Amino acid sequence: MSRRSSAGAVAALIAALILGAALLLSLTTGAGVYRQVQYRSDSSMDQRLGLSYITEKVHAHDAAGMVSAGEFGGCDAVFLLQELDGVVYETILYVHDGWLKELFCEQGWELEPGDGQQITEARGLSAALEGRLLRLVYTDAGGTAQQADIYVRSGM
Image (cartoon, rainbow, N blue to C red):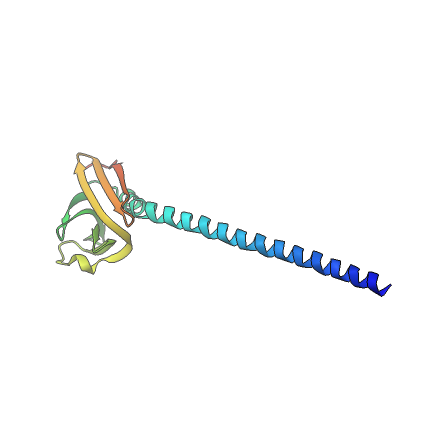
């Protein structure tokens, strides 16, 4: 009877080891798939973040004469104006030193591109206002260029 018990115990042990190995392999594979999905999701978000950020800012400031395009520190920029308690402030969105940056200040202040708040990594921004159409070409950190045409509804 002891030989039969030993054989049964060995068979049960082997079955448990096979089951454990299969479980470990399944968890390892699942973790790898999760990492790939997370990487793709992060990459996709990084690609869309900059242009979406600029677009939402423009929509939030869409008032008569409050949206313009120009140059700031030798780079194309989007200028968004707003009046608070009788003082006009501007938000400047531009790309400098590999970053999409935002600078909020009182209109007319002499500031440098390095003073802006870093939003997300980026390679470039081209902005032009043609009538009521703001044309943007945004290049993300990976070099992917995206274009957006934003109709400024409130007019000039």
